Image 1 (cartoon, rainbow, N blue to C red):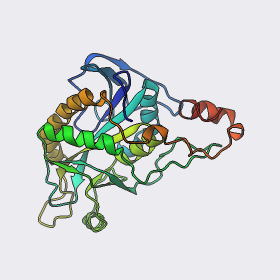
Image 2 (spheres, rainbow, N blue to C red):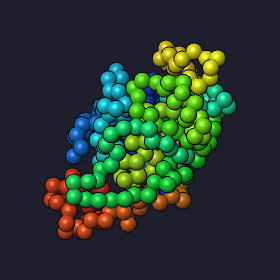
Image 3 (cartoon, helix red, strand yellow):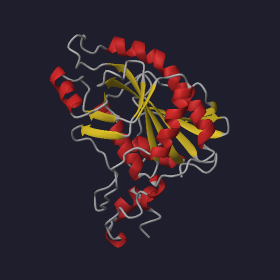
Image 4 (tube, one colour):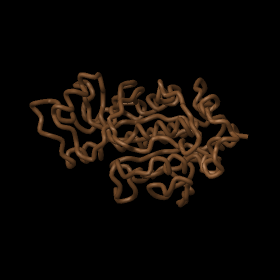
Amino acid sequence: MIMTDGAKLLGIIGGSGLYRMPALVEEQTIELETPFGKPSDGYVVGRIGSQRVAFLPRHGIGHRLAPGELNYRANIHGFKQLGAAAIVSISAVGSLREEIAPGHVVVPDQFIDRTRGRLSTFFGDGCVAHVGFADPFCAPLSGLVADCVREAGATVHQGGTYLCMEGPMFSTRAESRLYRSWGASVIGMTNLQEARLAREAEICFATIALATDYDCWRSTDESVEVTDILAVLEANVGFAQRAVVTIAGRISQGVRGCGCSRALEHAVLTAPEAIPAATRRRLALLIGRLAR
């Protein structure tokens, strides 16, 4: 189950070009400290209809943080502290498929990891957990998201593989062609760590990937330019904002069929009495119900 009532919080992560959520009412900004450090910015918490929503600008207001500088653990843990049961991540991506044109939206269902050395787990330091990640996105939530984005007026590709690269530089043409040969659909720099940590935090996770360009695999195209990306993003952000309003209206009714909220049940291998006290305190919000 994703949500059973409006008391549960819906988290929204805004990416490049999406730094605020105008539909929020009764909003307040909450600055959080987490056991894993400080999140990218304050969480803007309010309501859309009866649904409680928290919005976090991934790169901080003013786009201060590069993909490799983000404190992904703090960002996701902060949502957990606020009571999030689901997170929808909105991201700009490059298209690796002719049929995914700039301006289209992809709701992916798989990942390929090409990042290097990023912290992608809450565990370690005396507590070992192996969480299932074969299907990295919450399928019921992704289905709801795809329907809502489609209703918002976007051309939606439901399913596909998001290749997460290290960045911040864009791909070479050789890399872009290689990723196409692997069957990847879109390329971005941020969502993999968010999805992994959301699974460990037992939070449902889905992505709205806004295609802004064709990366650089098409030999007839110029290489990717930030100015071109921002122009397409400006048009696409409206789809995402309208979709979030619809998602908030429907998610509180309950969407059933996933096991995200039970991801840790059989994943923690360390005996409770063997977990160091400091690690137990740091992980209390995640494993408190398991490590007794």
